[in-house]
Structure formats: structure tokens, C-alpha cells
Image 1 (cartoon, protein in one colour):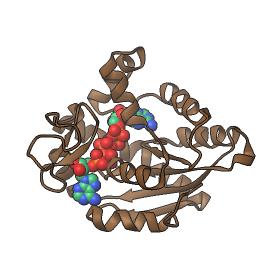
Image 2 (tube, helix red, strand yellow):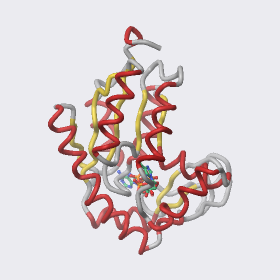
Image 3 (cartoon, helix red, strand yellow):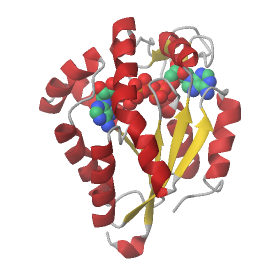
Length: 225
Ligand code: AP5
């Protein structure tokens, strides 16, 4: 992997429940990107009971950020893997300015260009409505919403037929904590990318049928390699 490969990375970020994962799953499929979704990586580790999962679980359940020291090596490793020929999509990383600067370093080292940072600006009422109605598939990870994006059969995953569940951190206390952490740590990341001139602001309140095409258009509507 070197500079000549010219791989690109797109970041999608915003508050909890903004729709990062929902938009990311569509983008990955349409643009054939390699996903680096830190929330999914951590949840998988928790489910397996791996050392990373054991460490991460206590933070996640409380709605706090997992420490940078734990997160940064995970993303460094993913970026250095010889995949992502069409580019990477980072969902949920970076969440702190320290993570953002580390990402710049790791990208440089691996010949990856951080192309755009899509910020899903979303209002608090919408966030609460989305998180309280979210249902996820514990088997394949598909994400639904009881009203906004319901499965064909109530409570059952369209893709694999497994019974849907609520995420542990979608309890009220954890949601409140996640929003506080977001305000405290992640809003500076908006300024960081604005200053770099790669921030793209998208109205996250909009229905997916409206916001998703806006994002694709922003990315040039084509493969971002
Ligand atoms: P993570 O999984 O990344 O959680 P989050 O940032 O809180 O975001 P969510 O997954 O809750 O929401 P989302 O924006 O993906 O929304 P979704 O698409 O599901 O991280 C979890 C935890 O891991 C963190 O709290 C932290 O502890 C740890 N962690 C992860 N990354 C870390 C890092 N880098 N550093 C430190 N710690 C880290 O949509 C929400 C709902 O709305 C769904 O039901 C969906 O169907 C619906 N919906 C989505 N879009 C729309 C739309 N446009 N219209 C209507 N409904 C919609």
C-alpha cells in the first residue's frame, strides 16, 4: 500500500441517532466502500467477550466514550489493511480532536486521503425519537425504526428472520449521557474539519429518502476511489 494507490476515506459523523449507521450501510453498498464503524467493531467485541469487549463494555453501557488509547490502534490497524480499493467509510470515528489528528497521521502513513467529513446535523427532538424507536438485529446488525423504517414483519429482521432487540445504550440514562459526551467531545471535531475545508453539512433531520441522495450527490454520485 503506498501513496500511488490514492485511496480515499470519507467520514460520517454527528450526534447519536443522527442516522450515521443507516446512511453508511447504503453508501457502502452503493459505492463499494470498506466500512470502519467503531461502534459495530466494539459491539462485536462485547458480544464475543474478547479483552477489547470486556474493556469497552463498561464505557458503552454508561454512554461514555471508550478511551482514545483503546480506539486509536483499532482504526490504525483497519486503515493499514490492504483493502478498501474503492475507499473507506469511517462511521463513528473520529469523535475527539485527538482521534482526528491521529487519523490524519495514520491516513498519511497508509497513503489514504481524507476526502470529506459529512456532518449529519440533527436536532435533539429527532435524536430522541429515533433512538427510542430503534430496533436492531442481534444476528446480522441490520437497523430499523418502529415507525420511520419498520421491518416488513413487526419485530423480525427482513434479512435473516431473527427477532429484533433494543440496544443496551438506548435506555434513557445512557442516551442523556451520550448526548452530553457528544456536546463535550465531538462538537470540536466539526470545527476541525471546517478549518480543513472538507466539512459537508447535511440536514440529518430529513427523511432518509431525501438526505441519502443529498449525500451521494455531495460525493460526486460515483465511486470515490
Ligand atoms: P455508535 O454505535 O457509533 O453510536 P452513536 O454514535 O451513539 O450512534 P448511533 O449508532 O446510536 O446512531 P446512528 O447515528 O448510527 O443512527 P442510526 O443509523 O442507528 O457507538 C456506540 C458507543 O461505542 C459509543 O457510545 C461509545 O461508547 C463507543 N464508541 C464508538 N466509537 C467510538 C470512538 N470513536 N471513540 C470512543 N468511543 C466510541 O439511526 C438511528 C435510528 O433512526 C434507527 O432506528 C434508524 O432506523 C432511524 N433513522 C436513521 N436515519 C433516519 C432518517 N433519515 N429518517 C428517519 N429515521 C432514520
